[in-house]
Length: 62
Image (cartoon, rainbow, N blue to C red; front, side, top):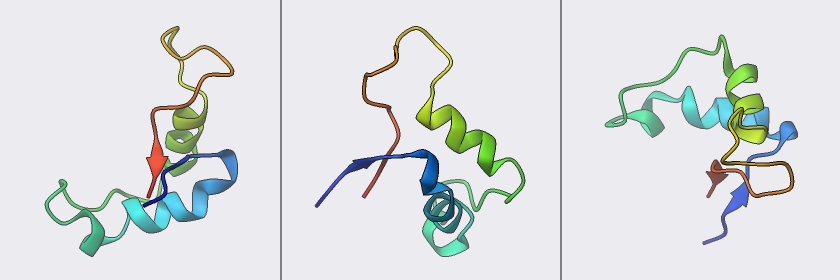
């Protein structure tokens, strides 16, 4: 299994994963497509001081 950080170019993969009913079954259901850009932006650049620039993000893809 390979984990990789969510990156700015990962929007398409993030949308396919988070908006897919089968993938999100049991996880609260699929998310709406609206707002996905902002979610990826927050995953890549967390707004708090616990994740200073240059440190890995908390969001990962399998």
